[in-house]
Image 1 (cartoon, rainbow, N blue to C red):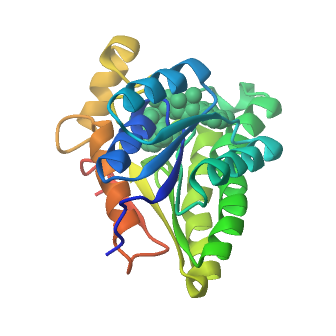
Image 2 (cartoon, helix red, strand yellow):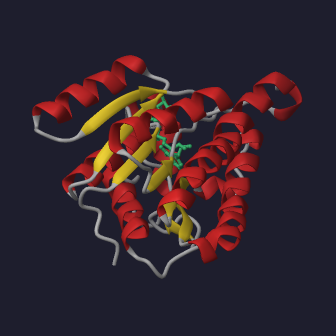
Length: 246
Ligand code: NAI
């Protein structure tokens, strides 16, 4: 089992929701964590709070869909913590629009962040992992990489790609001691997913989860920690979805 104590971890989208819960789960294991996010205010607040608790964290601003920005994120991590042991490619977002009304620009934006971000983060993290003899990458996919959501075409497409990219990278780098896995959350109470924002739509979502509620960010973080620790798992996507896809 991989001991996470003292390991250098990057969590993209680490300023809120599933990412922030993941940052907290890694520091609880004694890891050093880069909170990498677009959201400077949220990221700095999380950094301050965790530093006050004596944790080894650093906020780095990143746009995961911008190659130079991702390269900089990895360079800053190496500068601060010496290497990259674990990368959690978690930053992502989606929206719902009828496909015949969606602009191509909007389509590409969602694909570039959710799918392109996996490629870019992995590319630069793997360069570092190859120097130190290995590491682990965990991608945040979604149940919507497996089943359709009306109006979420680019998100469906990108998250489906995350599942196959996870397999592709896992097979490509297994012999270099780099494992690549993913989590596929069901709907989770975070970001824009909450009763207040979604009203009746929220109740409909709850009904789709046989467990009878949405997930909590900590429940996804728990699965991410499992994937970082278990050294015989690679190329898989763990469903953490309250039975949504069962
Ligand atoms: P969230 O909105 O709370 O967190 C996403 C974070 O990613 C935010 O802090 C945001 O600033 C950051 N981000 C967005 N675009 C970025 C970019 N281009 N570069 C850097 N950072 C960026 O949302 P949540 O729910 O925690 O989402 C985390 C991941 O989980 C996403 O990949 C999402 O697609 C996925 N997911 C979420 C589900 C849910 O129901 N909340 C269900 C399944 C998957």
